[in-house]
Image (cartoon, rainbow, N blue to C red; front, side):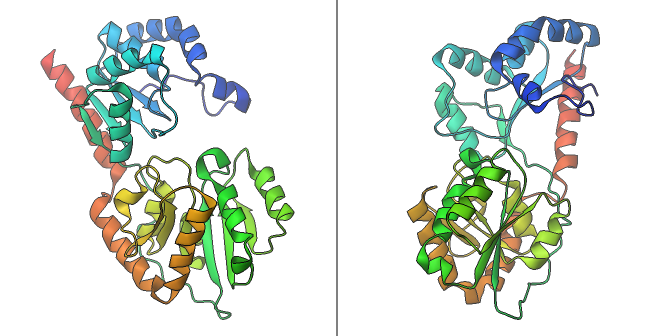
Length: 327
């Protein structure tokens, strides 16, 4: 297996790494990538995208050269559409792929709307999770405190932590025995800490990035995720596998794995009032949280394979094998 891109072990500045994902930078290095692929003659090229069109230059290169490729899209954003000049290239590239993988039905359907075409070669693939997969004992606090965890990159544009801070600043939440821990790292960490201080919130903490995700759910009762955009939140899958449930927005694929009121709670929009109302519904049902967590685990284990990585690798090997057999 060969990986095209800057070696992760080298200490390149973050700004330079972000630049290589931009369209102009991709087009600038296309001759180098073309020459590399011609020398390598790969059986299969895997193009992994953050959003559903940020690898379009590489997709078009493989399509025009007749190279076998599959495309993985981790997210599609309702308010972020490809510019008109790129839509035909995106449509042709996705339709010509051996397979297009999306992490949620929402992302697939949105992509089809953006290119105004059906992708008969598309299917859903799940990301590997970082928890043991075992149900964890329900955390009982002697003081009866409710502890929520917001597990996400600290990037407000997508994850919406600022929305939650404004909800917690309302008087009704200040008076309750509830706290929220914001796990994760990101470009808005100091901005969020600053906002929490500005709002005089004493019921929030920023523990940083946690290597042991199970440890989060040993001490927290539920996930709260006020996302403005999503693919399928891995944090939600992991929480449910541990026997916790999510209080989430109806973004991306969240509503595909959460049944509102039974295996979690879904806000209709990533807005302060909508998140507040949904958190209120969850709070009113807090005596049932342990049973909701158990129902969430039962539901997600029926939807997510036990080893998503092995299953996906098997599919990729199958694509490469079928190409070899055909040739």
